[in-house]
Amino acid sequence: NLLIEKKDKNIYDLKPTIKNIKKNKIERMRKNIKPSKLVKPIIISNDNFIIDGHHRWYLRKNLIETNTNGLNTNEIYNENIKTVIIDYDIKTILSKLKKFKIKYNKDYLSDTVLDISKIQQGKNLISNIKRDIGLLESNYNTINKMKLV
Image (cartoon, rainbow, N blue to C red; front, side, top):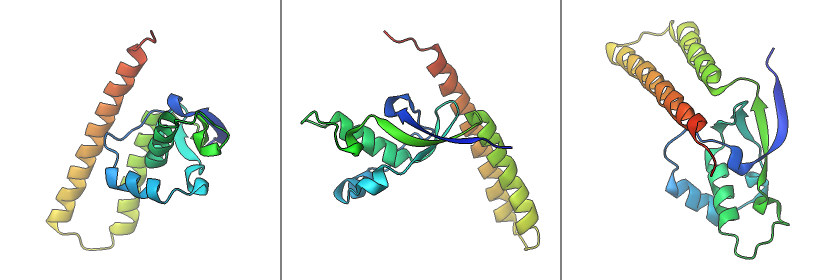
């Protein structure tokens, strides 16, 4: 019973969930700018966290901020961006992804023989997910405490 909505959102209302944007990927995208790729919807949670499309979001934001001619007639210079909103907050989405990954591993990988190093990698992955959830919660709480001046 998941509600998914398509809606235009202001690019400055969206919040990234990754710390690092790959500079090389941004440069490749900038060199090969295809408006059809940059207007592809970004997938977000209902509390405006980006799930997929960080590089497109960053490049669009950068193009807007460096637009020296001041025109926004071209869709890629418009601050409103197409989004697909999943009707869950970011914590719920991460929790569901984690459960899916565990179920997927159990259902599809249990028939294969796993060596100890694979099991340890899985444990490390789960630890990393827990750490990332903690960081997101911390960042989310910090953002909620911020006040516009």
